[in-house]
Amino acid sequence: MRHHIPAAAIVTLTALSACLAGTDAVAHGFAGKRFFPATLTTDDPFMADELSLPTVSTIRTPGAGDEPGARDTEISAELAKRITRDFGVSIAERYAVLSPDGGPTQYGWGNVEMQLKYQFFTSEEHEAILSFGTAFEIGGTGAQRIGADRFNTVTPAVFFGKGFGDLPDGLSYLKPLAVTGTLGGAIPLRSSSSRTIVDEDTGSIMLGREQHSDTIQYGFAVEYSLPYLQSFVRDIGLKAPFNRLIPLVEFAFESPVDRGGGGTTGTINPGIVWAGQYFQLGIEAIFPVNERTGHNVGVIAQLHFFLDDLFPQTLGRPIFDRPLISW
Image (tube, rainbow, N blue to C red; front, side, top):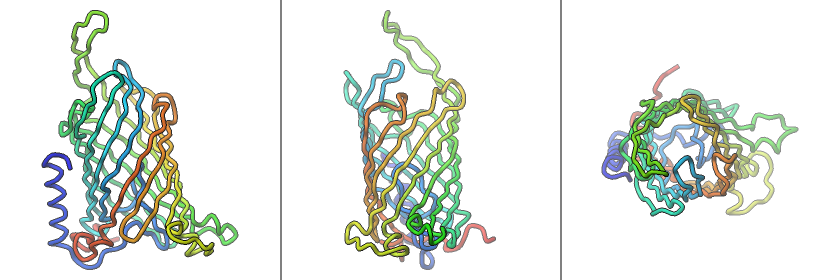
């Protein structure tokens, strides 16, 4: 974890969970018969007690302005903890290794990120989930040498998940399909900051301003659940480990909207998740969608633990076992 700050926060969350947990927990990521796996690139629509440790990604990024292209390798972790049955908090940190073309490799921690999320709607019949939340990137907690911002960024967002188990029986082989997604806006709390610029011709150092644009962040994942197919449509005889596989494709995009932020960037990530009772494994390829994003294919992999199943009587229960709001 990131220095002492996130580590202390994670210890505090888990200790509170162990001391104050109430009655039995509700299983993670379910809406009726539908299980939504934790996705690797786009945020999940549900609130649960879970730990992603580690998530590892690597890709070559293109140069921008006077910045050269580089290989960006990141190792990250995220802990999510329910405060009530439908409201919770998560904390995330990453360690980055940047290897720029023609330059020395840079190492460092990124900024600490926290998120509050409220799951306000769940339909078991229609296998649907809706949530909203706000993420906070705490500027200045990461290393500038790997590009960590010195300013705070707030990202309010909505999240959704929808399974197609309510389709008519004539479309039974489409019932294992599900879609999850998110739509949000990243708002930097500083519109610009100073930066040093080196004139390539004279070598002189000048002080300039770097603009920080507001951006729209959006993405979705399309999933086909083989466990759902086997259990609720037709048993086609798949054996372990194939009977727990969920093929998926994730789409993640970011579009600046002001202050000369440039055009849209994004990736398309086809992959597969193996979901067990206590943990899941996932791996995806990373395909840039345009030249702004890059030309090289990357990879992301994740080991994800279901704390509500691993520790149902302690760490895996809400701290306060009641809904945030009773309708």
